[in-house]
Image 1: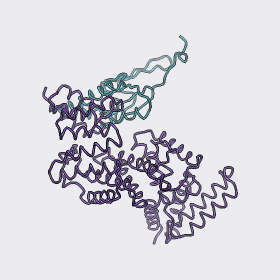
Image 2: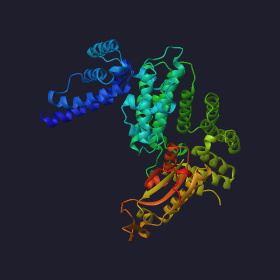
Image 3: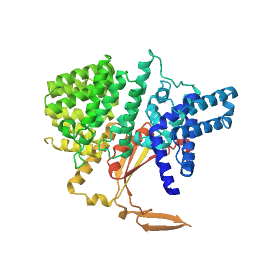
Image 4: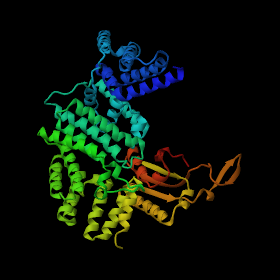
Length: 416
Length: 123
């Protein structure tokens, strides 16, 4: 094997390990020190060493263990050097031994879940939890995350650093909470995974690579949680919800790149395998007998799929699900979808009444779906002038050109 | 906090569009302006004539120099701007993403240098 071939093979192996084991390795290194940046730095140095060493000496039989051994040494060196003052000698010894013993073990324990609980800890600012998970568990860089969350890369980078400092300084524990604490703490983890998915979902055509990948990464995070907590109904519900939404992605655009609303999508374009998996997850969740918001949202997705596939209206069931969901979450976003379902069941005027209940919420002034829903319902009641104005705001608030064109078509279809 | 959203795009793109596309594009800008006003974020905005209408002026060694054309020749030109007043950068970036120009060009978001009365040079 010549040098270049070995180089390519080393790169492939390193990339494969990075994809599969990045979070596991960071979690393992950071769990003992609570020092996420040190773990990330050490691991990135270990990857660099691998790219220098493997082409010469061949890829090791257990690349994960190789990387961990090197990274572990780097962490300890780091502490001996610049972080010496912060840590007592005795603790350094214990830490080194702990890392040693574990690195000798061929099977590295999976502590990603414990790390996810640390990243989504209530003490961490809620808006940085999803970016933090994406960086720490999946190794995404701050620039990619910043683009997806529509924020400045410098600011995102600073906020990530601050959150990691907080984990170390406040000694936030890397552990899965005890039984009685679990539901509330799990809620923040699921919230962060959901936020990551929602950012990916805003690019329906999948044209923006960073965002499309984010949806896939969120699915990966959802799978990590359900694999490690297989009996948590809300974790199963969230994964079911995400898979249901993702399954419809291919149908959300026509070949011309125009936006296609759910009611007009071709169900044969949906990913049937993904829907089956989602349905299976939802069944498993409901067998556990504890309802929650993600299961309800997944059930709503399931009801939409059923209606379109069978061709039989099930709006009464949908409204009922929204009623329960609104009672639990109470967000104006849910109220808007509930109003649209009510309009299907009882007519556009009933829908408008329902939407009026939340219209005073200041958060809706810049929320495109509110204006689009309002416009659609007004148009159905024949209030075309008011509908035109509401469409105007919805168009102005939309950032996706395909959806903007769709709203413009709806607006121009109104009678003058 | 005020931000200037500078809209850069290849200005030949507009003339390549069909009449219907131009109307749709124009309407999208109208709607965007309306949404900014409704949210209380709009301070000012203008569309600029093409760079072929630009003239640059500079005074060096007390001698004025006037040249035809833009200051910098580039593939994308400054075609217009929005001056907005929003709470923070994240909010400015959200508005920039909503601007129709973001899907056919690039928006540069720059915070306005706030001049307090005391910092102004004495007359």
